[in-house]
Length: 452
Image (cartoon, rainbow, N blue to C red):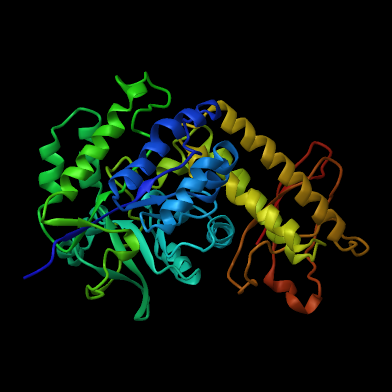
């Protein structure tokens, strides 16, 4: 006879939430964060809670007692902190170096704040790509929480695994972290019940359909008894919606067909399951929930998202260039620069961000850009006689000979003509590069040029 269906939760908590004003943070802690800990404490219900490091650090400043309660519940085995990273970032849209820094800085900060790094990690925005998956293997993640619904749409072999274990294939037959499926169809039913839009049976019946293990909730925490940018829900001051969340979880927990566990224990005693891939040719970047949640959401849909992304790419290239030139720095300074760059890549700045969040972005980006320019200027070698500009490969990898185009612009009167010289000259044959003058100023000097 098979055992009960094992249920786990991964509540996504994020105080960087795009539409959440700073002034409302204490309210969100009181209405959303504290009630969740009380469910674990008073009802002895194991809870998985995913928080970026920035959120943990904000709570430590705003409400140290909450952090103490979290630690006590973790010691009792009633709460598991699921890893996210330093900040929530839409990984497939971000340079690999920034993603790597986000995860490694996050791992180290969790160890500092909680005593140990998480063993279970939650894919940011539930948006996945093959390159992102490999990075979780690098940081030693044992388990990865990722949505099942959209990957299974394009990979038929995943459909039978909706409530079963599996392991991420990293390529070449290499096994990555174990997969814990998040189910957006399921967790949206709990949201509908909590918001008073559906009966409890709709959620409970769906959860208790059988299988080996399932995520009883894997969505946002800040949507219960709080609506950023919208009228306050009825009964929010009394905690009506969080009370419904508790009611739903306890109703399922009392059913003999199910048993709750922390995410790290959910698959204990079960076979590992097959190696699977999540990306598919028809959907190389599987995302979450409905079709409107896709990579373009963070690429172009927010206020000047293209401008923000462009600025971040330029900062990242400047950072790599400073390192390439050997700009003087210490470890703490470099970690601080990476931290700033990761924070500027936050996905919540690219949707419905508040004015204060966007203002903070531009102030921080300006300070980081100025600091990087100073480092580059101090480390740039003197130009040889007759040289006018120095171009640096701002990639993490050495140039492999692939054809590249570099667009350049010059102020009036600076350059009448140009030629390319490599340092050392043996690094690039004369015939391997071509400089094309595209435009000239009224005085005949070069306005723009293309180096191929």
